[in-house]
Amino acid sequence: MPKININGNNIYYKVKGNPESENTVIFLNGIMASVSSWFYQTTEFEKLGFKILLHDFKGQMMSDKPKGPYALAQHSRDAIELMEKLKIKKAHLVGTSYGGEVAMRMAIDYPEWVESISVINSASELDETLTLFVRGWKEAAKRKNGEKLFWTMVPTLYHNNYIVSNRKALKNKATAMSRVSDEFLEGQLNLYEAFERDVDITAELNKIKCPALVICGEDDILKPRKFSKKIAEQIPNSEYVVIPDSGHVTILEKPNVINSLTIGFIMKNNYSS
Image (cartoon, rainbow, N blue to C red; front, side):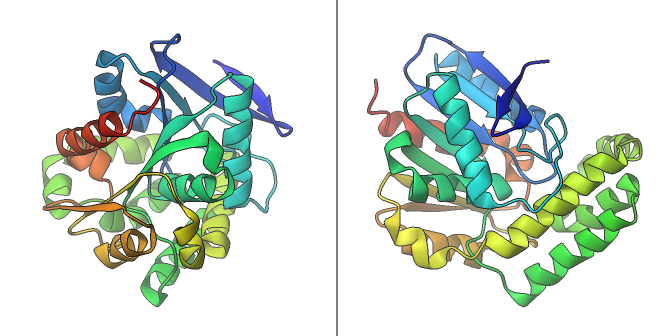
């Protein structure tokens, strides 16, 4: 299991695709996810000869889970240090939800490292409803019951059609979550708190100068399209796409659409080629 010490923590990572390529795509996970969540996307980018880098943020499944507090800026710095150690000079970033927020933070703080960003179902600020959702997750995580935490989150994550069509897969995931460690749940709690504390970056979005694609699921309950619309309005010359019949986990619900959008956008803006 490949891990690398980044700022004092062992970070799990994977390099896929063409290791010799100068064209790199970094996929940045959603808050409860791990690198495997990007299977449908990495498969297509491998065919195109890209180098692909994935990693679990500290606090996530396969990486160290140190005591908090965490910060989006820390995740951003960790990702840059990972690039440095792997001798990646610049990359396209594709992030969903929490990963999209880290991608925006990276584009603000380290613009010379970022070729483009694709931000999927993310937010740059809170409203009262999103705040209450996150506080509900925090309370569920504190109960140290992964299965109950998962079912607490499901209605906010998936479109109804996806839930109906994937009941068995969701039950299997809930069963897997019943076996997670207390350490994992503590890491989740630290991640939720980092999101709640650090996500307010709307006023900084005009600092992002790289090409930006902003995507949202039309029926996202957790981070409704108004959040993506605001991100797109604040990032100069960004592109904005709404995907019908999709909830928050669009990378799983509509993978072919996500792949068409991100591949087309990155190929168009792939200045290293």
